[in-house]
Length: 328
Image (cartoon, rainbow, N blue to C red):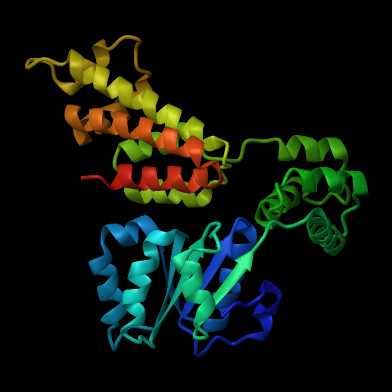
């Protein structure tokens, strides 16, 4: 059953257990999911689709074997694709009533099996989101500055909105940043907004790649959830993966039976920065030479696929990253 986003506040959702929120507006989706969570008032567990599909038996156990001593739960599954369709159908067959499942998906085509499933069944809730237009974002910004009694010109608001790529989530992140910056000031000008919104707010891509290659899946997940990468960052992330993977392969090719990892890293040319040495050692411990070769081939395949599917580039890269950090 399709529900418009503006109808959310009027609904109770006590009798519905499955929700699919999809579209390209990440900020709006987060708002909708938060509203649903607040209405249901349950404990929440969040996962990425890749985590679920890599260990679906564990997820089935969590859903079907809810303890009598546990509070009823909401399971939020982020970055969903068509791959989750079969798992959801399997759960639907069991007629669960004590858990709620919220799926957060990117753009879904009309012929999507997942989308069709939710649209046709009256017991399932599907909520589409679309990019915010500039009028909507301007109104959100105006309301913010009015509530905090901050003087700002229309030209400055227009600049702020233009930096947000049609996503209220990006706008709200910028507004939070502005609130911290102005402190007790009662006005902000165009130049200040330009400098503030031009600051790099993402966690370094280098850190993301190093964490994934170190097989620290929890930290990798935290970085992805806390950062605001854009679609054009996808190729850059893969290129840095390729660069670091080739360095690991080069290290392995220079290794002989008498050379331990520390000596190998210390003797490497060009020299590895001292802060990076423990990270590189951890990566060598987690990857064999043959696995690194497989990884390099996989990076090249992913980049080719990325260029052919630019509309879902970030989702493809995130799936690649999760698979890399969780690979045994």
